Amino acid sequence: MSSLNFGRAVQAALTLAAITGTIGSTPARADIKNYEFQLVQPTVQAGADRIVTVRLVDKTTGKAVPDAVIFATRLDMAPDGMQEMATKVTPMPGTEPGTYRFKANFSMEGRWLSLGAKVQGETGTVENKLVVTADK
Image (cartoon, rainbow, N blue to C red; front, side, top):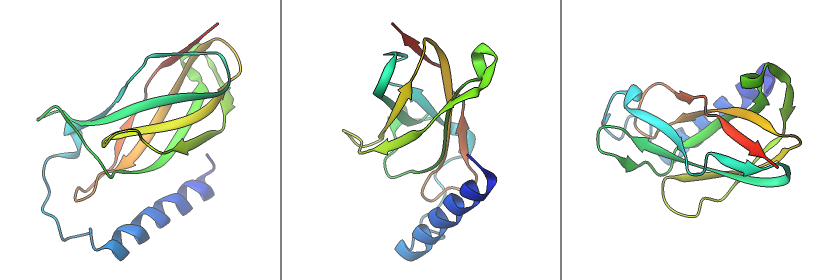
């Protein structure tokens, strides 16, 4: 994701939070380090239009965190030393609160990764690098 697009995504997320009144209206629940993304399924079949589902979890309670603003997504093959092999990621509606789905083209077998999000009422950014393995 280019830094220009990344900056626009952050600005849009902050504008949405300001409009909906979530900045400063909710006391902080936990340290931002207490949140993490977890893969619902660690593998996908290689091919076009594959769906990856992740869950954002509060590690102190074990509960899924709904309504986060996902602003940075990147799938590339950096774990296999091919970070230039990147693919477009399209957000999809989650199927349950606290889950976030993305459609992507896994053009070949290998390991792919990376997410960033803002949790409503928290300062800081949740950033995780997840490894999704694309199999035949």
